[in-house]
Each structure stands twice: as structure tokens, then as C-alpha cells.
Amino acid sequence: MKAVDTNVLLHFFVQDDNKEQAAIASSIMLAASPDDPVFVPQIVIVEVVWVLRKRLKYPRHVVCALLRAALSSAGIVFEHGEELLRLLTQMPNCADEIADNLIAISAAKAGCDGVCTFDMRAARTVPGMELLT
Image 1 (spheres, rainbow, N blue to C red):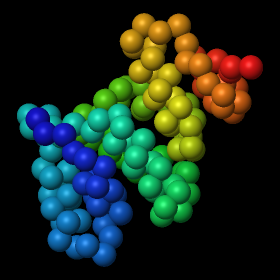
Image 2 (image 1 turned 90 degrees about the horizontal axis):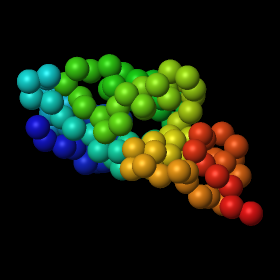
Image 3 (image 1 turned 90 degrees about the vertical axis):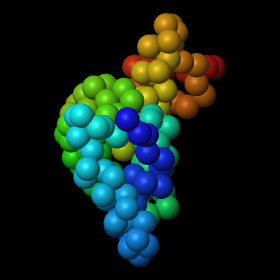
Image 4 (image 1 turned 180 degrees about the vertical axis):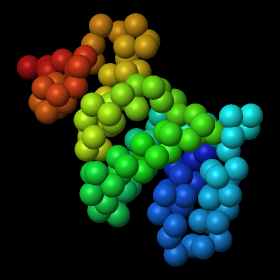
């Protein structure tokens, strides 16, 4: 199994002006299978969402649809994939909350009691986030 970096997943999703890199990214992602999967680390998910939302100005629902489509591929293994799919199912347009949710998921899996934050929105909306006052 090989992992992919942010730029590979972005070229696969965006199919931008760099046709050669987009073609290579597509061939890697589309060739992935349960017998030879591609792994997408959590930090790649966070970076991809940030670039799509902040740099490329993709709407939240489009970003979430891209992630859901990739999650449905049997050959693409996402770190915390089950939790990410559950999040995208419960909150279909949650692109802006993915990073905070993945932080909370990682903390819970590490046995932490919660995540301390100064982010009022995250503390209000993400289970496990605790506002520092």
C-alpha cells in the first residue's frame, strides 16, 4: 500500500491546468483496489479541504461531495475513514469543521479526556472540544 500526499489528491479532485500531473494522479487513484489500496493520511484530508475551500473557493457542499465519493471507493483507505464518513453523513456540508472534528477523533483514540481550545465555534459544535476561558 502506498500513501498519497496532498498534491496528488488535489490533482485528482481538481484536474487542473497541469494535465500531466492530473493524469498521473488519476491513474494512481483510479488503479487503487482492495488488493492494492491507496492510503490517505488524516493531515492530507485537512490540507485538501483547506486548499479547496480557502485557495480555490470551492463551496462546502462540493468539497464534502468529493470526499464522500473518494470514501466510497473500496481501493482508497482514509485514516479515520469510518469516522469521517459518519461526520459527512451527519453533517453533509461540514467541510469547515473537518479539521476540528479530526482533531477530536484523534484525541479520543489516544485516550484523551477532551481537547482544550480557544475556538468558541469548535467548542460549541465538536464533541470533545472544551473551551478554555
